[in-house]
Length: 65
Figure 1 (cartoon, rainbow, N blue to C red):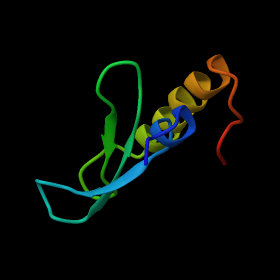
Figure 2 (tube, rainbow, N blue to C red; figure 1 turned 120 degrees about the vertical axis):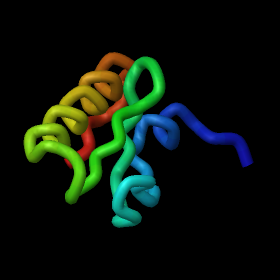
Figure 3 (cartoon, helix red, strand yellow; figure 1 turned 180 degrees about the vertical axis):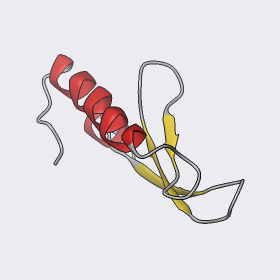
C-alpha cells in the first residue's frame, strides 16, 4: 500500500526519548516537530499544528482539527 499526501501530512504518535511518554510528531517542510506533553513548551503543540495545517492547505488538503 502506498502512502498518499494526505497520509504523510498527518501527525503521528511516537515515544519521547527523554521521558518515555507518548509524543506527537507534526510534519513540516524538513523533518517534523516532536511535541511531548512533559518535555515541550506549552505553545509548541498549537504552533506545530498551525504549521502542519498551512502545509495541508498549500497542497489542497483540508485542515485537521
